[in-house]
Each structure stands twice: as C-alpha cells, then as structure tokens.
Image 1 (tube, helix red, strand yellow):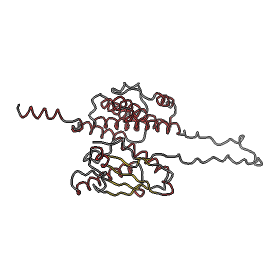
Image 2 (cartoon, helix red, strand yellow):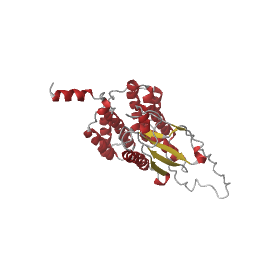
Image 3 (cartoon, one colour):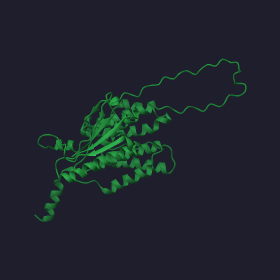
Image 4 (tube, helix red, strand yellow):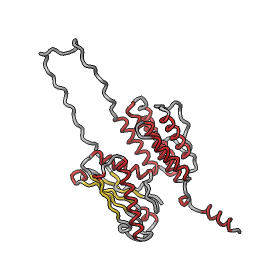
Length: 325
C-alpha cells in the first residue's frame, strides 16, 4: 500500500477528540461576540447562542446544531447593528435538539410581556435548546448543567422588578392643607441575601490547554453569584497540571490556567483586589497510579472562598461537569 493510503487510514482512525475544529468558524464566533456588544437583551441572547455554537464546533458535532446556533447568533447581531429591538419572525427549528422540561418552557413563555425579563429570557431559551441537544446524545447528567442554568435565568427573570412609573407633582387642588396630619410611609422589610448552596470549588481544563469551556464558565457564574451576594468574600485561585511533561512546563501551564480564570472573573466585573492567585504546576496531583480520570481531575483551578464568617454558611462542591480529555 502506498504511503499516502496509509496516512489516510491513520487519519480516519484518529479518535474524535484528536481532530481540530475549523479555525475559520472559531474566528467568526469571536468576531460576532465583539460585534454583539453587551447592552441589550438581543446581545445577551447572541452571546448565549455563540457559546453554544463554539462548544459544539469544538466537539465536532455533526448534527447541524452548531451551524443553526451560529446562524441564530448572526441574525441577532444583524438586528442589533440595524437597530431592531426584537425578532420579526418565528425562528426555524434547531437541528439536533428535542424539547425538554416543558415546565420551564411554560415559564419562559409566560415572561414574553415582561420587559425587564428579556435579558434573562433569551439566554434561558438557548440553555433549554442546548439541554435538548445534550440529553438525547449524552443523557440527563450532561444536560443537567444547561437545565439548571436555564432555571436560574428564568428565576432571575421572574424576580426582576420593572422601573417605577414617574408620578407627576400634585396640582394645587391635590396638595394637602398645611394642618393635615403627617402619615409616615410604611417601613419596607429588608430581605436577607438568598441562601446559596453547593458553590463549585474547582474548574477543569483539556490536555495542554488553558481555555475555559462553556461548562467551566457556567460553574464560575455560580461562584460569581456568591461573590456578588457577599461583598466581603475573597476568592483564592490555585492552578494545577497533571503529571505528564516536565515540572517547569507544567508550572507555566498552571499559571496560564489560573490567569484564564482570573481574567474571566475580571471581565464579569469582579475587582482584582478580591482575587488571589497561585500556581502549583504538578505538585498536587491525584494519589495513586495515573489514569485518564485522575489526570482530567488534575488539570484544574481550585476556587477557595475566603472569609470565615461567611464561608461557614456556604456549601462547596467538587463539580466535574466540565471534565475534559
């Protein structure tokens, strides 16, 4: 057999994770992220569709869902750039996705006439469609992150308060006489911050990579909620690598990973003064003989909330929804 035929057979035998996504598609996604901006409900939906498309392109999905998600994002960005405030036609179905969690779809539909809800409602739709893609393909466990994210966004949408209407000043006829009794306004009850449970304390990375996956960013959003709810909290970030490669390279890799998490949190508005970073390289790997699973767990950035008075009321969890090869 000729050398070229052997090369073709070798390429076809490569596992799916060894292939690479189309760089042109990833460049188009990055361009649309930049063009979408961040000041409108349409922008929030566009970014959610782009995250969906990017994740599926990276995973080399062949159902058509990545192309459809990218087309939705492109359409939204076009509307943003042409000053259209809402969709003008019902969108086409998304290939490779089924309808899941009808109860959440009903909550989504009920929010259509609530203006302040739209910045949450649009991304919630994307998350439900994303879950409808993950569940038939990988099962409920892999779809659960998108379902939880959709449910959280719908809760935010339902809780949002519309701006109070502007009340005109009373006319002379409406003003109270000077001797009228003064009635103090009712005292508003101050609600305590919501109880937060199971805050993720780790995110994971692919082999030799320092980019955050969509699942990792979702986990970091839960951490951000805790940080925003409790301003006295600080976050300590610890970067790690698995045991393959030399110590110097792995230290640099763990530095890149912790820098990626820090940069993401800064972009979400978290002050640098509340973040501490440290890189450990391959010093703290899983005990025992290395396996694919243990190495996936080693490629991580640990997230430690710091403030004893607050942390004792929070519950952390070692989330593994973002484990990668």
